[in-house]
Length: 99
Image 1 (cartoon, rainbow, N blue to C red):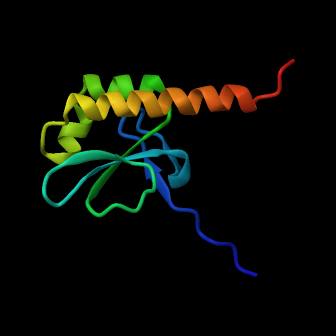
Image 2 (tube, rainbow, N blue to C red; image 1 turned 180 degrees about the vertical axis):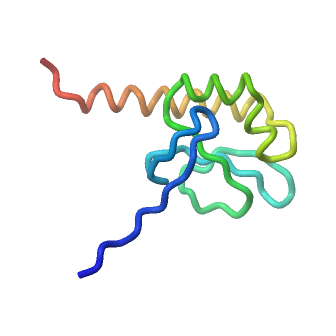
């Protein structure tokens, strides 16, 4: 049986390549709205971020999401990303074995 190809995307924060499922997608819809896409299936231009606060801070400081989309990214999108990344980091800590 043939192995399935795993899609790889590049994080706009740290510029590292990772499997698509490990990253958080931010999408600009055809009408110009920017939002967080947790399903990875919304129509529009997508940009990906690692689920870490450091990558989000780098992307925000260098305005990499604005450059990728060509439109300003509202603050509420960054707030939602911060909440999602914090939840993901918390889940990762709880999943790690306690020693």
